[in-house]
Length: 414
Image (tube, rainbow, N blue to C red; front, side, top):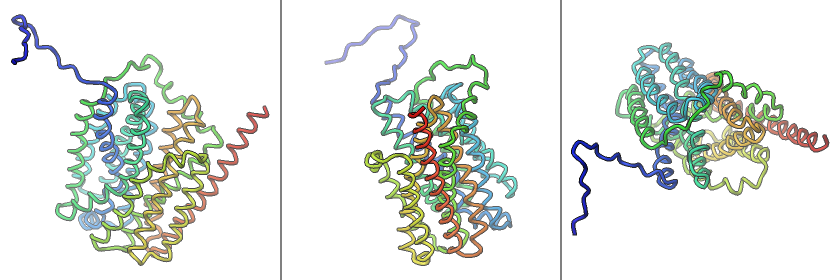
């Protein structure tokens, strides 16, 4: 039987298509786009690592300049969290996210066209700053517009994507540079950024009314207050040191020439992916532990793996397993720091989370610098240096836990 039709009056406009915004449909549409956006955004820090040799050859520069290509992005990326986190609350998460993606596409394209290392480093700072608008806007949107019953899954999926980008970006970059010039990695990333901007605009809900009538300084007022939370500061530094180790070990492996074959490098990088994919499954058992205890556990695991790597670095299979264990330990630390920041931040939860993410990527700027300084002395020196950074992170974690207990006790007795 033919379906009935409705006759519209002549000259009447066709009815607008109503988008299905049910919680399940909304989550199903936004989750894959958010995951891919997180991978592409954070992955920009790591994509140049497999390109070092090609970039050095074209620009006739040393390894030090190449490490600054990583650190420059991390420096700008950290600044982007603090700059755009509050602005996304003020101007709307969808508006800031879509605009950030489009501008990131332009800057990434220009980075791929850079004709010298100094120009590339300057553009990488700008690229990091602009791309830094993406993670805070995504996380703020998840916390306010995704249905409460779906937030845990979406949050964990996006957080895992930020971590997985460490390895996935290097694998993709290595695959591209094997067949195309190194500039194709940046040009391709620019196209993906532009495509994601339109995808995000299509799947995200319209921005809710914001507090643009308040002075701009009101959006940033909570950040200084966060820095006065004494128990939080050692944990932030510990998180920064952990991120320095994460970036430093992969950069150092490239610089030391410990593993040279493309197949061996691919194996080394891909070995950590199963651990990263398993981390969300550990969220429930880890939740039974306090946040400082989670951090101590993560740092201990990472430090043991790093020390073991100093003795077994020449064996590819063993090193692949040890790096996977290292990444697993570091993957426990970052969520614990973020959650601690949110809990200790109180009413300034969003600002505390932005400051925590800022500290991570300040630490990320340190990783390539440490790698460049120690790599000429061999992989063992690099590994011992990174292990010492993890020991320092452990001491700071214990200090933060002690200060937190003291503050809690003072509150109870007061």
